[in-house]
Image 1 (cartoon, helix red, strand yellow):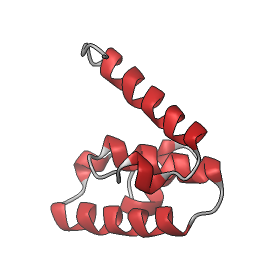
Image 2 (cartoon, helix red, strand yellow):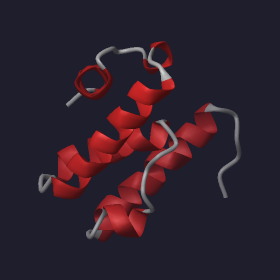
Image 3 (tube, helix red, strand yellow):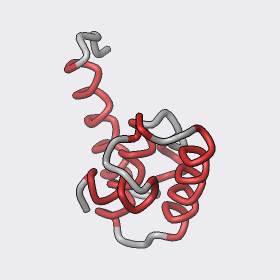
Length: 89
């Protein structure tokens, strides 16, 4: 799963800035449902990461049962913070 594919699947475009508020909300809701149903760890992480980028990801303890997955998500968040010029604590 790559980000462009996920964006196309849930929003009909690879540019989330090009969709209206209603389409964005609907796509986020569908993605959240799929995250809750997905059993594959890699696919769950990809869905969570996209939701995180859109500001709609569930808390790590809700999204991931496995501590390794939660740690990977924390690393992802830290990398994004550093890339945006924010310090990581």
